[in-house]
Length: 164
Image (cartoon, rainbow, N blue to C red; front, side, top):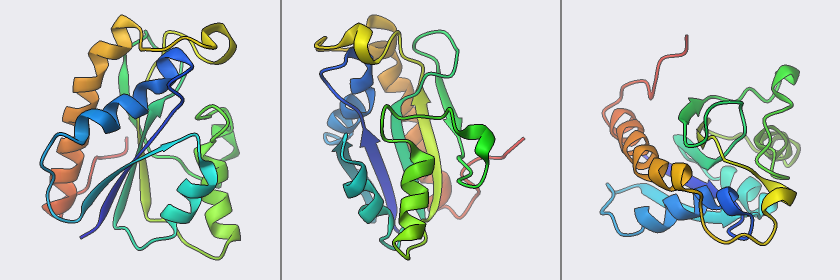
């Protein structure tokens, strides 16, 4: 069983560094065999090529503005064919576009889940701001617990989560 935890974000844009911080903390944990954590930063092409590898499950981790209170952690399953999800944007690294890129390169990505965190702000308003806001910083451990739960479920042969 192979699982990729793909963390994305930009540490120079405040809360956009959420995924990078999750990757940093996961680096100090002992993960089960077959589980890989990788910090992709803002490298969408690298992520697309990594998704072409034969993983059983991919978990993307990033700050995603969805309209919740800052620091809210949530789980999404993107559908690359669903145009209504076009607003789902990982700040220039739109997961739907990355999944479409994988397909255009002749690959097929594993099932992808997104562990997201509502940022306090992104992009130009936090340009040059280093570090996470307090609500997003507090959400890192919650996101890690969710990721560990998802990994455990996948390794136990259970569905990672149930879609409503």
